[in-house]
Length: 424
Image 1: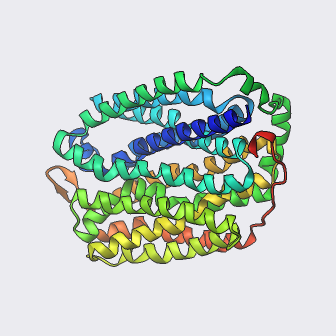
Image 2: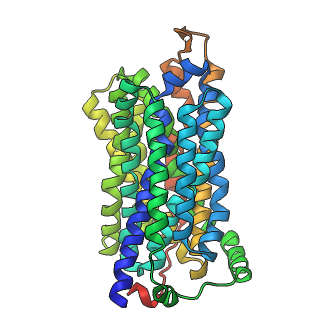
Image 3: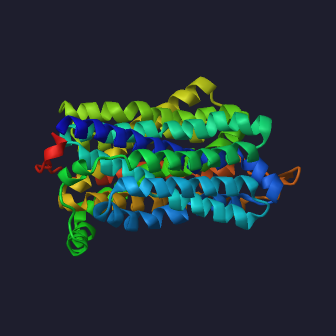
């Protein structure tokens, strides 16, 4: 039975990561269809920022209730429902004929996607011992980052040849198919295995322990650092990076999409390496966050403020931005270590909530700044924003890395001693 449990936990983990990858595609695809959206719906940068941010308007606040649900119920049951919701949202976006349907579809996608990352993180920390989880948590993030890679470069090519509507509808159908797979496979767990799972805490116990989560200084510090270090990924790589590279470095849309995807490739490579450094005790988590914040800032600045860079230099710099930013993933495990084991889901949810609150603010804020600075210039009815406008609108990104660098010195590390029987 123990071997069966170990085999089942890997199946659950792979499925959870698969859904996280899928939702990340949904999160970033608008970045490569900016001109199409502006032309089709006759909107400016501020509205575009809202279209993208409506995903986060659902995603961020849902993190806290999702955390409670993960602690009270099984993450495996929630993923099936969430995948179906994501698929419906993608189909709605692809078929939308009005701006309000775009808003609603993005909101629906954000609602369903809110279960993905937390589900994968919960499986990693709940089913595996701390040493193995230290490797799996960065790996979750790295594998999930394949989603943005697919959602930008490859999706941009498909949108160029077929329009964005057909690929989006197909993406939605894929989400529905995923939900069917999850429904049947995740329900195939033997009842005997369920009995071996540790007894779930009462809801009142979760509420009591959660109060400690929200009042612990280290929880808040990790949340703020996670927010600051992730702003470039969620706001720049997630939306504004492609149009910026087209303006600043004269990249076409496809090249800009692949260049931005290098940030996510950097996460893919950096995550497991960061986990390896920690598991082998080469570096502490705190040290990696400090170093990562500073070096990510130094790699981002030339891309933002030196125009007409060589494509290879741009690709390399953006790869390193993602590589060093991947140290952000340790804010989750650092926060978990300071709270009760029964509130793992809630703790991770709170960090993730804070992270995407930053995205909710920064994505539309960049658009609002661009609209405020706009001089009225258009091309074929589409607003044109100058490089100097982008420079001013994006200044918060390197500053956020510097703030994270300073705050990370105040982090403390605490080892988790509790180990469940099935985590051996």
